[in-house]
Image 1: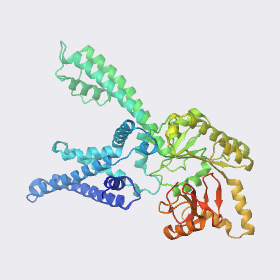
Image 2 (image 1 turned 60 degrees about the vertical axis):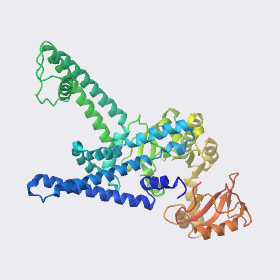
Image 3 (image 1 turned 90 degrees about the vertical axis):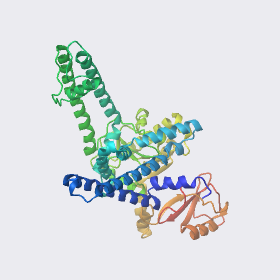
Image 4 (image 1 turned 120 degrees about the horizontal axis):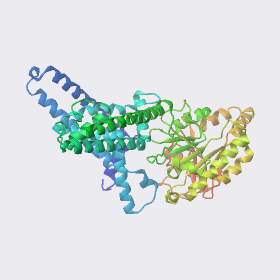
Length: 511
């Protein structure tokens, strides 16, 4: 408790670390409050319909008091959630105190303006008597019920569509506001304070109301122009309203269609993505890659972007973001913000001969490394981008490494090697397929725990890790990058070496 970072760390874990027991406990309490809040709202509707004369004395006041308590607890929850939010740029980039402060403020503001958080903030305002009608917005908290949908949550898809096209919506609403402001001001100057005043337009607010009703083609009829100039202004607004409706119909239609069909706008920029994974060259037949990646990563906490020059295949789950672009062109790479990505996977195309597929993979790797080398933010990264490339022809492995690939996977050669080896060594292919997969005693890479003195002989380290962490150490990668698999028992393992081990789940801290 003497550590000043202890309490902030617990608060951050309670609201932003889904893997912790504290987070699950807090979420359980929050959902209990949400259900209680909805029940109270339903009871109030019934009570209002029944009439207060049929209620027991003090019952209405009790309901109101409980509702206020629930709203106060919601206010505490959203306050702690916003206060404990840590912008990812702080851990991803090195920055000075002034830049860190700006990042803190800007990051928290962006986080607070996210749709679900904004709904929570508006809902809490219902604690004020004059804003009690906002309590109905708490029903929108049901959007958080991710578990009701096995594969794709359509509500999440709608929110993602608004987030991805926020610039488009901002432009459309700004144009609407400009037309309303011009029309409302014009009608007020023409008929609100002119020689022939309109009895329905006494203030500028009346003019703005009339302009909004007119341009949206609602036409309540409570206010109508009485002069020739006013009718001209009204006619211009009516015609503008027709174009405005067509504009919004096109925007809403295209964005909601992108949710249903999985199509993303080519100019999409994901400024909110950080520490994400980019898959270049995805094809419709590569669905198995997404299934396995979904087992290794949690798509709800790690964004996975599919970057290819084709339209989104219909079998891609909604939790994966599709970006239309060509990864072999430097001008297209900014779409996926590679300078903020954790890893890149380059998938070789199957629709062309292997030599051509490898040429595309090598060109993609070279383009990515060249683009990153010239990006100013790349030098501030704490860890370099990890690039994994798939090669179909063994002769092109060295070319891919030269182009900048950190790891090269020879999928065709690997498959045939497993088949050939299984002919002589029965059972090895089945075992290796499990080892490299998820959900079995899989292969992991980690760093040496802090409690072990280094350097240390390999055998001693293996025995210590077996006793303390229950893992099977099979080798390590030394400081020169050389792989040492099943080394001599006396081989010295240093503090900075990467440990290769087998375990049912990740036991050692990730490198």
